[in-house]
Image (tube, rainbow, N blue to C red; front, side, top):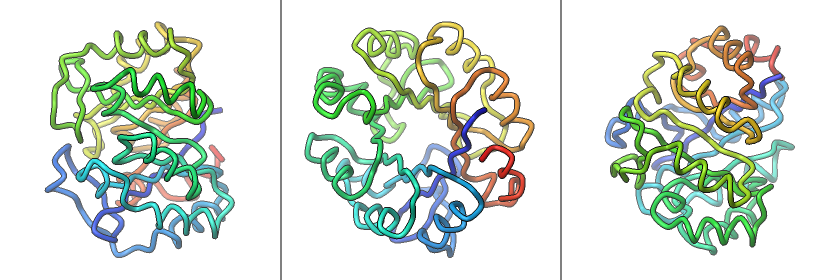
Length: 240
C-alpha cells in the first residue's frame, strides 16, 4: 500500500505553499507547524516531509529549529529538504531530528558530493531529489536552472552507485493540482523497478493516490490539495 506523506513547508516563519515554481508566488497560511504535525499524527500519519523554503532560497539549512520542535513533540519520521548543500547541512538536519534527508541541487550540480553522502550517511538516510521540468530535463537551484541533464540518466547514474530512495517531482505540476504526470511515473517504475519511489507534484484527489498505488509508487507527498481542502484527514486515513 502506498504511503501518503503530508508536507509542511516553512518560509518566513510561516507555513507556505508554492503555487508555481516561483518562490515569489508562495501562499502563506496562518497555521502552526507543530499543530499541523500533531494533527497528521493523530489522524494516523507516520511520516511527514518538511521543506525549508528559506534554506532553499539561501542555499543553506535555516529552519532546523522547526525540525527540532517537530521531532521533540511528535513520533513522526521526518524527511527534510531545502538548502542542503554541505556535509554540515546533512549533519545539522540529522542532529535536529531528520530521519532522512532529500538533496536535489547538489546531486544534479555536484554528483560526486551526493555520492560521498551515500557512503558517509548511507543509502538508508539520503534521498535523491530529481526535479523534472516539462522538457524532461533536471532542474536545480530551486527549480531556476535547467541543468540539461535527462532525468532518466541522472536516476540511472545514482542507481548504479547504490541509491535506494528517489523523490521524483514534476515541477510543472507542483502546486497547481492538475494531477500527477502518470506517464512519467510509469516510465520510472518500468525502468527502475528496484528503486523506492516517492512522488511529488499535482496530486488533487484520492483517485490520484489510488492510481499511483496501482502503478507501484511507494509513497506520495501531498501539500496544496490538503491545505485547500481538496483532501482531508478522513480521506487519507485509508492510506495510513
